[in-house]
Image 1: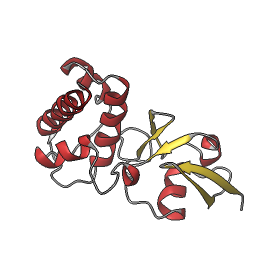
Image 2: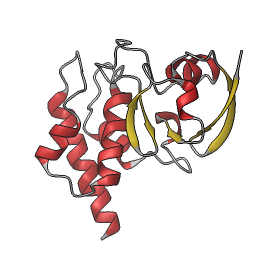
Image 3: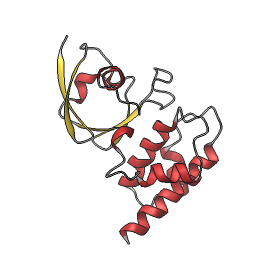
Image 4: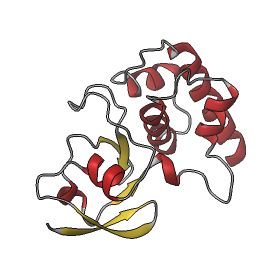
Length: 158
């Protein structure tokens, strides 16, 4: 079985993966990360979202070998020095995750958006999150959380 060196959350990690193995399985089965989760397996729900070079990517349909040499960020690596990322903090404050299963996709997509566009409008937030699914129906709380994170992140930079 081939072995790949991946840069995950700023750290070089080795993982064994078949040539056609999705990144999701390398992250969860091979490296035992807890953030990305299997949802639909068809890149339609977003539960498996990670950031690759800052862009949200559905890891269930992304081959492990295709991300060698790229920066991969996961929910597992967002908190720094014992502090939650502002998006994570906002999700907690707004109680935006009812069951929490899909939270990975919403948080990672929100991080990508706000790091690229810290002053995202409500329409831009809605557009960036439009391909994600939540069966619990916490969409309104999620939008509140992303707005809270946006405001918090912009206030820190001001």
